[in-house]
Structure formats: structure tokens, C-alpha cells
Image (cartoon, rainbow, N blue to C red; front, side, top):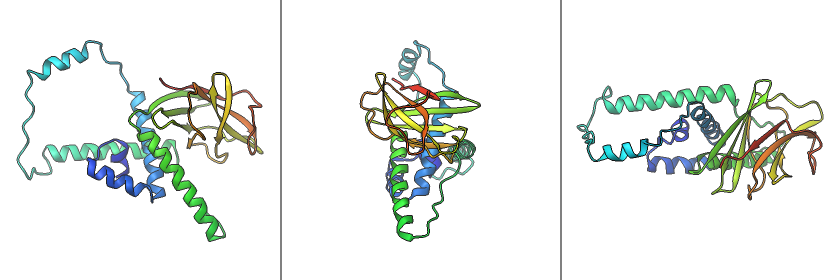
Length: 242
């Protein structure tokens, strides 16, 4: 159901059941987060500003255009229900392919001690669930920018949840001993928002801390472990969408 959930195509009952499943399933939570981010980027690529007169036209036609009557029960697979199911499947499959190409696969944890593996898995599961919650928030807004050398970055912000997610695609790995650090832009003052994984070129990262009125975010290259304040010129600056 990950593709259908990312496209908001599940009935309320199935959506609620699947979201309960996400809380205990790291692979599904990660895949859902990546598909939702990809769907948002695909939507931005095809977005069109509607005509100012469109709303009035729709309201006028509501009173004159009849709704399509419901079909008979037991519609055959080739009918309207079958076409809708096939359409949703194609969209979900396309989103899966796009996610695999742009955001990479899920992380496989390998540790010698079982206790360490369990702790890491719990932390990762919580993080992916929080990312999925931001991407699926009704008020989520996205802004995408080119980062140079073919890389792109998108920031998804939910003011209602007071959280933000940064999605990177094709970012060059930092030099040895360096790491990408994320920052909130608080009216010109940069506030640390966590570190990216230096071993991955494609990733979705939940910014650490609340948005709390920040106007945007930045990415800099810092020594391993991060810095209290930026020590290099930003490799990315994105204003938060309104």
C-alpha cells in the first residue's frame, strides 16, 4: 500500500490501518516517505497555475452538470472500477521507479551486538515515521532548487507540525573528514538542524528541531561531527514555501 498511501489513494479505513502499520515497520515507513517526496516533486514538475476565472466556472457548472450515476454492483474488472485500479497501480509503480532512481534504497543495519542493532533500528523507525508524517501533512508545502553538478534539493515544510524535511538527490559526497550540516535560517541567524549521512548521495532528512518561524534553511560543509556555527559558504540556500 505504500504507493497508494503516498498518492492519497486509500479509503479512510485502509489509510488508518496502514498508518498504524507504519509505526512498527521501518521498511514501509522509509518507502512511503521516499514515494511521497517523489510524488511531490513530480507534481511540482507538472504544476500549472489555474486561471482566476476557473473557480467561478466550476461553481456555475455544478448546478447544471449531472453526476455520473453509480454502476451496477459487481462491475467486471474491465469496467470503471478496473480502470481506476489499473490507473492507481500505474501511478504507484511509476512513483516506485522514480523513488528508486532518485532517493536510493533503504538502509541495512549490520552490527555485531544485537542490542546495538535494536537501538539503531528503533531510532531509524522513529525518524522515518516522522518524515512520513511531515510529507503526508495536509498543509505540507515544497520548494525545490538546483544545487549544481546535477544535484537537486527539496524542502518540505509543515507549519502545523512545526517540522521540515530536506530531500537531496545526486549530491556529491563531502571530502574525507567532512559532513553536510543543515541549518535553519532565523532571520539571518543560522541555527543547527542536524547532519546528513556523508555516505549517501540521495537521502531524506528530518531537520532537527522545530521550524519555529524560520524563513528558510541552508546546507554547509563542516568538519565531521558538525559545528556550532557555519564555517564555510553555503552549498544550498532554500527559502521556506509560504
